[in-house]
Amino acid sequence: MLSRTLRTNTTTAQRIVARCFTGKAGPIPVDVDHYVSGWTIGDINEFTKPGFYNVQTYNKISDKGLDVFPRDFYDVGAVEGNDKPAHVLVMRSHKLQEEQVGVTVRAIARCGAGTNNIPVASMTELGIPVFNTPGANANAVKELILCGMLLGSRKIVGGVNHMKELGKQGVAKERVEKDKAMFGGREIKGKTLAVIGLGHIGAATARDAETLGMEVVGYDPGLSIKSALTLPRGMDLMDSISSAVSKADYISINIPYIKGEGGTHGIIGPDVISHFKSGAVLLNFARGELVDSEALKSHLDADGRYVSDFPDDLLWDHDNSIILPHLGASTEEAEDSAAAMAAETIREFMETGTIRNSVNFPAAGLPERPDKCIRITVVNKNIPGMLAHITEAFAKYKLNIVQQINQSRGDIAYNVLDIDPVIGDGSLVNLNDVQKEVTMLEGVLSSRVLFGTPGAGYARNINGEYHV
Image 1: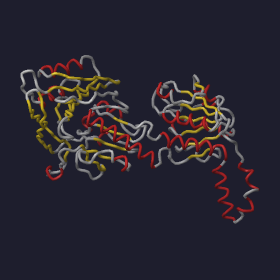
Image 2: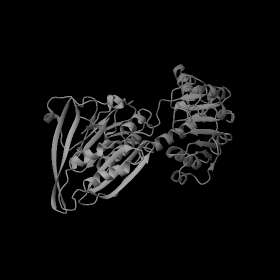
Image 3: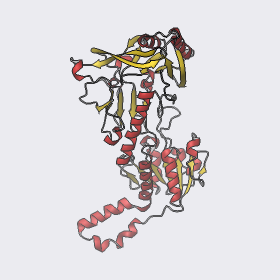
């Protein structure tokens, strides 16, 4: 079972936090039990910071981006050497293992678009949203694609290496004019660029290529209206990858890598490559596994070109390939932007329950919580009848749901509800009892009470056991 991979708690701390607000019956004390699981140290009081969301990071994350987390109620630090239980995990390239996700983790954020380093399916099964930062590094990758077009056109790399060798021999000045004919190239103005995948990066590449005087064609079977509105007006959209590349001098692939049947592994294979023009330059700053290296080698042997920032065991030393380090998002600006976007997304989720930019949860959000109400979120399996069971649980305690939203995606469903905690006769309801009733419904995975102390109010249903 997945739950066995979760860290078990050896010590459990309970903190009762009282908060007041004005309701129908005047000032209302609301007790929220704050249990923290996952501790492995003896003295809880020495290490606990009550009232903080604990955000823990893998990899080096931009400090400028992390500054989006206000330090008055967010405790941000590296995972390594951190004894506190994490509420949120933030990472870049770290390959996350299931056993690194403790029972207190409510969300995971990746500073970047791809989430291949995170076991997304397992996190979905556990009811944990995984967020990414689409578009945060789009400008950095786009600029590298444009650079790749020039590298693939003008034999710049070979020329640089040649001049270094001449410099070692002390004859660079005498040979600089004579040898330039060895490195002739072509201009990109007036040439055709095929853009495969028209998301943030692809659309930005298409716009700038047109500005440089290129003809642009594209293909994207999942093109959204939002992305379509950002494309250059003169761009032609084709009905297949093969038709898009058939007249292209340059081909930029900007699609996600998806494993399995119907996925994108080796999508630039023999059939597509057979439609390449002689001398076409393939630009791959998306994922190395998208390209069938054996098939591409035949194209390179016939004077094609390949520029990529992913390693390739077959093509790395081919005369017509330029393999760079994975530099796509390696700019200070991109790292700042991705970290800031991740922090903003996490803040929205932790503080208001809003979900956006999640790769496994549905987008969902309510307007600002009305006065006198408490917001509760519920994660459940997407099975028939769950919404009715959840609302019936609140009705059992005679609680009024002021506003709510229910959205689903695949096997998961997510609910945000604003409730009035005062029942008709003016008496109060114990929220702890209500939360346990809702959380322990068959099919519910977790719940959060978004009121009171930051970090408090989280509960999980793990194989029929109540964890708070």
